[in-house]
Length: 324
Image (cartoon, rainbow, N blue to C red):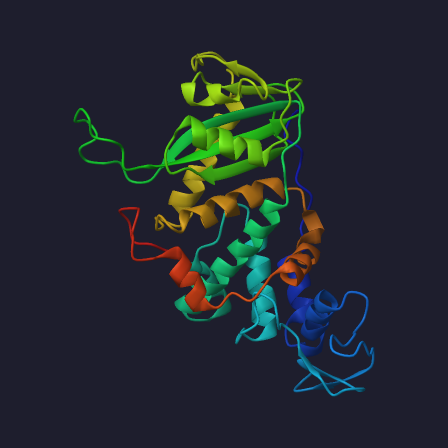
């Protein structure tokens, strides 16, 4: 299967014409997200309301219960202007390769920490979407790649690499053809147990399906679950086995190290989830903003402190300054 031409996205001009300097239209976007079939009170079930505080708060006519536009979502404590929030999400989700917090801060005219938090929350939304997708195809390819700064002492015998391994798996219509979907996951150790656990969780396996690998022994534990084609690759050959898998691995590493210039080890899962989402949603076209609405509606409050604690940002992984 050849690469398909990506459909056009909504232009930035179209977005700004609709939402810039139009608070009511911004409210409508999140109102439709929160109540896709119309307002209803979560306390009494009434469908009639008053809007107060510039339309950001909705009060039930029956019981007086107040509903905040972004309550119980990942943006519950949002302090950004609604237009800047919409624009920030649009810029981040529609970027082909990625968008750094520095770039986003410049585009929105906000401080770096605010932009960094918005980027992380967008990656969390991407991660939640990824978790719902399970690969299902008759042809798979998988390999373990490494990312990070190389140890200065790697040439010494017995010194393990400091690079972080991550598993890459793709599904295709035909063997060794352009992939349909992708799955990425950092693994603590490149071991049979970790490989089997991840692939069994992220893909539907059967003996009628084929898994192509490069001959690594860590994949042999899957031999009883799927037809395993594990052979050494001759990279000098044109269109060699796992060609597209290797192309994607190179793209992923270049995007992460080229755009973000280095991330922390604990941040890596979110960045891999971002790259997975971008590839799997490359044909979204004009539907980005609708997808974002659905992601926010399914999300849960995620305060800044909780994110920082979870990421444990004190442990730098790359040699470069972290953009996060």
